[in-house]
Amino acid sequence: MSEEMKVADSFELAIVGCGPAGLSAAINGAIRKKKVAIFGTEFCSPKLHHAPHIDNYLGLPQITGEELRKKFLEHLQVMKLEIRNSKISGIYPQEGGFILQSRDIFYQATSVILATGVSTVKPINQELDYLGRGVAYCSTCDGPLYKGKRVIVLAYNREGLEEANFLAEIAAEVLLVPVLKDEDAKGIELNQKIQIIKGKPMGIIGEMWATGVALDGQDLTADGIFIVRDSVLPDQLVPGLEVSNKGIIVDRGCATNIPGVFAAGDCTGVPYQLCKAAGEGQVAALSAVKYLDELKHKE
Image 1 (cartoon, helix red, strand yellow):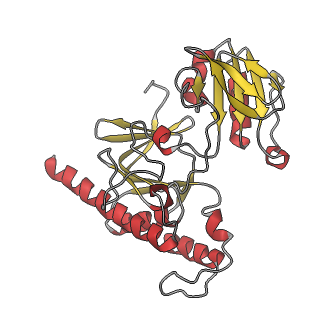
Image 2 (cartoon, rainbow, N blue to C red):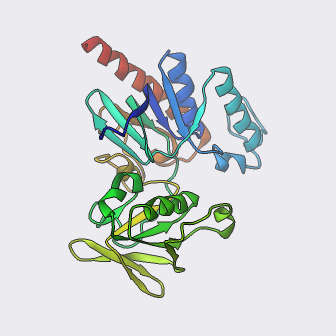
């Protein structure tokens, strides 16, 4: 890390995601007296919120999804746990644990539980092929590489517009392709340097290095491309994480192939059920607690 990239806070257990799996993991980690952080969104579990009724959650028959969601959040308040409204864009190993990045803020954790839900991210053509070779997800990390150059921002959410403004202070030219609803862009004033181009992104173009983006009606050229979405593919969030076409690969203890990283809930694959998510959240937390305790015994 550079000198200006200071760690904001440190935790024993960081949980990425605030659905049933993430909240279950947080509660069980806190019960075991670990310092827990929950990273989520402004509105946790919209999927649960929209469920008209739930009949298979043990002990709570004929409850609505919104009623159950509120009970989960009330349980969090009883435990004095708070959800940090921060999108984690990268998790990187370091000595003694991990660094979690949320834009220009960094957190430190000894162990991590991924509870990110079902990934709806569908990379555009050749996006992953050029990741790290002209394609990036984080302007704070990679923006300085394009000082005085021309960049393209594919904005799938409000954060993408903010990232475009940030890049406009660094790059010579910023081409913004908004791929979000008009109402989601309200209230954000764009830098005058930014050129807005309408079109549907179809793929990345290039040779050894990405040279632009193919839209449905034209091709754009640039030195770098930034793609900003609500979520990041798990194996891009945590470099080296093993995944399959079903989800993150875990063992019976919800451990991934990376020591100290666990996963729970829908991100590990079917069945997509509340009871399974909450159960896996507990298992992941207990496994993480065991991992943390074993580390202390080695010291």
